[in-house]
Length: 300
Image (cartoon, rainbow, N blue to C red; front, side, top):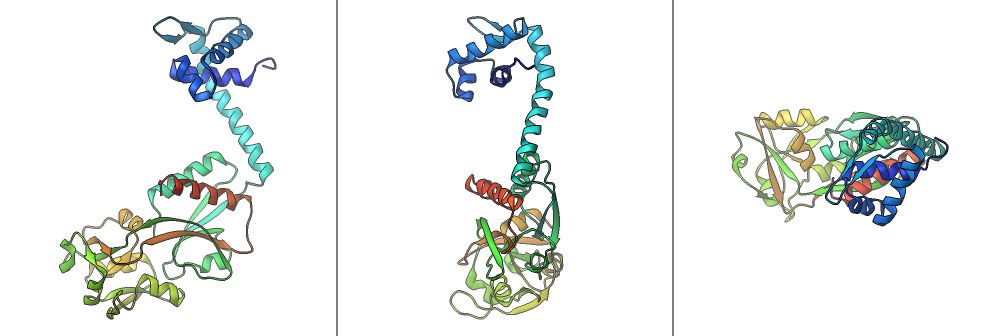
């Protein structure tokens, strides 16, 4: 093993997937002749042919198939070892506690899974936050990061990536006259009580989630206040009020007795990743970078 070259092994693994020298070169950013050179070098080290080359096709020999079957898990283990060492050197280790309100979208959970695969020494702990206390668990150091609805105006907290900017939706009972609508204007909020959020959520945040007036200034009737998302949806289902929600929440909480109608004329909802201003380390930065990259790729 000491005489083997890692680049040769990587080249063989890619060629075994592509079965094409040109495409293998494109994936490795090398010329086709360099691919051939790397494979020949590996075959010389092993002492036997690994690849059948003809003018029409590329395939693996029996020796190549056996070698591939043993190489794949060994190479994967090697990469994991290197990633673990890199993570440890950067301080990316130890549990990362992430809080969220109600639910987070499937795209965000994919980011969590990819983060854990990349940094296996940094498992995540997912905690649901009360709707009425979006920032308290962060202030009290119960979570390292929290996914919360904007706005965030807490002086002791730092706002990281902002993502999932989408139109707001109105949750209404299936018995409500608005339930059959494809969309509605924000001015129509003046016609029905709006479920609000209870303390200890800050006043500015509660107002953003349940505005007291429409954009034109018409008053919006005050409905009951709730401490959790499930309480709010239960009241909506009972037709005791309507509730503004972000789209990821509506996609996750399908109910037969509740309809979700897009609202125009309001600012888009957005989620943000927040932490305590005095708490920052390699784990938090690495996760924030993963979220920002996923948002840039339109996965959130």
